Image (cartoon, rainbow, N blue to C red; front, side, top):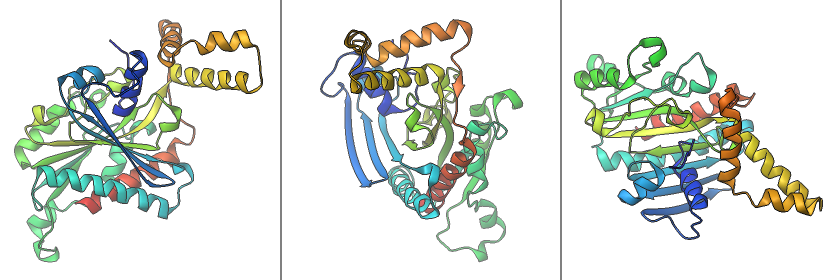
Length: 314
């Protein structure tokens, strides 16, 4: 069993291909790539059957990854362009699952007091909620306004309640037709931190990427479609060490360094290097979960991208 240690479907596909020395596509998987502009690229991983599910350890469905470059220095125009891509992908999913005026519940997962985990709650703060207005002041709204409600339920450590248990109670009472869940994810690449958005209609398993697995939030558990929006905000120390080793190997090659050293290091596959480093760090609890020092700004920019994308899609 491969230890993916990432929530991103496209990274899992790449890891599986390397681990099994597959040159072509993984059986049960289809991929599609689309370049929007120099800063935005869309990558889709389609898990078609049980074989694909077993390979990547994710349920069948379409996983859309939106890569956004230079978000650290993004202007408001850059944020708006990225949000428009999110809007388009969300509209496609909404049209697939619900009618134009049916109720939607938006859920921000995470801990607002822990910055890398605060993406969900911060997005909720900027969602245009309308359910209460339709109930109490419908005369001020357009006739095509969709009922939208939003909640940030907190985390198990502070509530003592599994998130899916809270959501079941809400769904049973207000009866939305679809749930949007926003959460921070883990990645196997430093470059993907707060520069990638994954959208899928297969639900989400909170904490899966960092080994803190909670009960899944999905159509199976809630009884209605669940669209999950996730952004990588952390990597583990083994990933950083592996990426650093790869850069060191390339530097040795560029500088015509020791040929013997280069050949020894280069014989290791990416997954071999990661597993070796993780095995060294883990017994001593040194395999820390790490986030960039600019995480405050990154969270603010990405929460704006996602909130705008959701609001325009609704």
